[in-house]
Image (cartoon, rainbow, N blue to C red):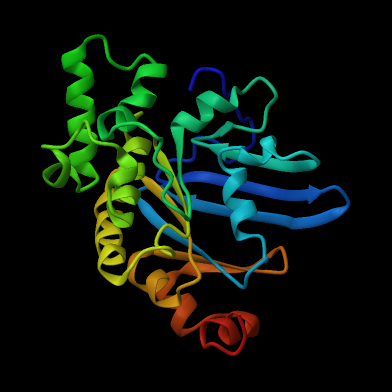
Length: 268
């Protein structure tokens, strides 16, 4: 992204690292209330990182920092550093709209636009000028729907309203819309919480496929889901990052007692 500023610290350019996102000393305040307190975290590329923790612990707030969605909340103040590919995204010269094309977002409830299936997916490529012709736009839409595992189900109904799809189909449509602008990172805020088990299984299969090409962060309250789909897990509690590591380690041999108590269901 041309309007991001390269960092200059000693960690930039270290060969062999697969870090996609580096978060340093990030604090988020809503007025005088601290929602995230001094969080530092490195997130790998081509990987699913699950963010877990009790309700209200700051998971979603942290997620929204990665594409600066918190900028839209009145009274929210974010300090610290967030780098994507060694480029600082917190700099004032970074255009959040451009950043959000690079960092897609999928919310808890499916939120297709009140448009056709085709126009939902075509929306981003149109406003970002990614297609030079109708046929190129059609190709982007089809490819995005294929990658979201939805093409076969909607190819004969592209001009039906996206809101007429089932809940699980709507969520896959939203994912297709997110990847249509060629993002590098996909943020997911409890994307399966409103879905039935069959639709959830399809979304989880899709996430596993997508991680081959994207860096994915997912907020989930389901410990079993985090264990199934993520390679790394970060545990938040009361606005602080308590522990992070490989998912298997977090769930079977955590270092912190608070982590152990949470993943074994002693509180939540």
